Image (tube, rainbow, N blue to C red; front, top):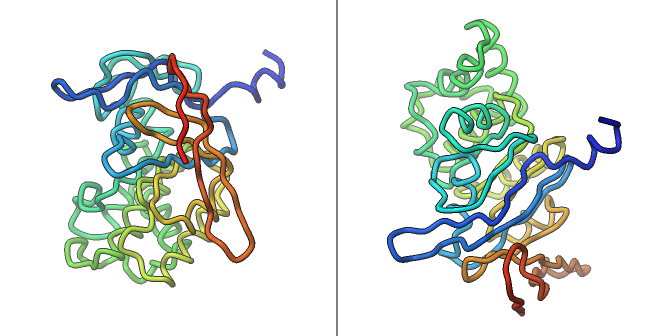
Length: 251
């Protein structure tokens, strides 16, 4: 395969993905690709299915139809998704779903240990990531005693410590004060990884996203991001539905 072909190969590719609960269809024939270097804003109303889509991408939610390809390989069974999760880091919306070890250092070192690093190497990696986020002094803190904002930063550290190639960020700035939010965004902005970002904070999308899609009525539409001086970022969908059979428009 030549270099041009490699560059054009998506890191994640979703084809006609459908997900539902009982009689409720959450996602209906959703399709999109994520390429290296892209930061994709996933926008939509509360309950539109944004978190469900992220969970389905890494096999934490079962799909009723369609295909997910990660790094050129189709993911069908749990073993496939286990391999995918080594390369795709998922920051959950609720940090308590991500933190389960007694201390911060143990939480952040857990992923590197599972990837096969020695105890000392995993500890060094954890300390390095904590320092990069301005959280070095938290290494020996008891995780459950942290504030919501502190847990958010540590949860991100657990993801970054595994050095994933793709980041799925579900409301990354939840619970952060202004200073911590700016520190977090500055760090994310410096990272080379491709990202899918779910956030209701327009300043987050304005800072990070390179393109946007909108999820509504179970379907995904290409969206246009407008940046105006001294104004907020505005996102609205184009009329073409990605992977759908009809057209729709959002304003």
